[in-house]
Length: 225
Image (cartoon, rainbow, N blue to C red; front, side):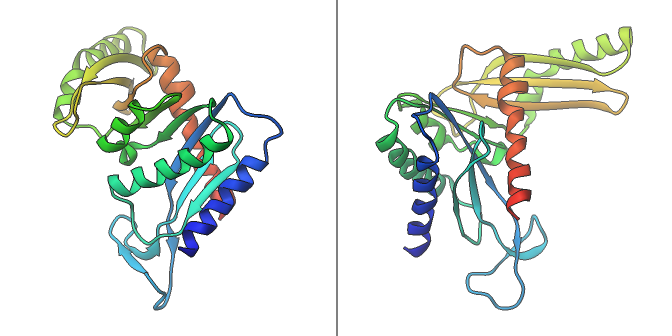
């Protein structure tokens, strides 16, 4: 209860930092490692970081870099827990800014089907998240990869290609738009995937200008630490 109340204070401070209602805000969600030592309450061993740590959730506004809120916790949220946080946050923001366009953004471990499905049912709310590769996605990217390889052989240097397609994972209720980025260079082939409900933006613009901008949140976290 105390942690939830503290998280709400951060949101109230974020809203109060604006002199006028913003037309657009971006919710950058990211977890970060907070190493812990000794027998602290709720401490947990995390296999990804190979250490005992807390794993607080940070939410920054992607255009301004302002902290929206942070939630102190010991492990990564499940999809339902993540959705619960998002619902409460959006409800609180909507009380102040009912018509502001909101974009939820995160890396691949934020692409929960329950989160995407809920966002798709809301007005003025969209999502752009990374998507973990698998065999089906690699098959969908095959022709783009081959085009990149041919361009690399012909012209040399680094070649980047973007493509938009439809994909439905086994846990998804419907097909969704997936943007594929293929990069071919002397280091090899690097293929990345992004899932979104934004249908109008071009694949290149959506990946480079919207999705890649989430990297700034990692810098905000470093500054925070």
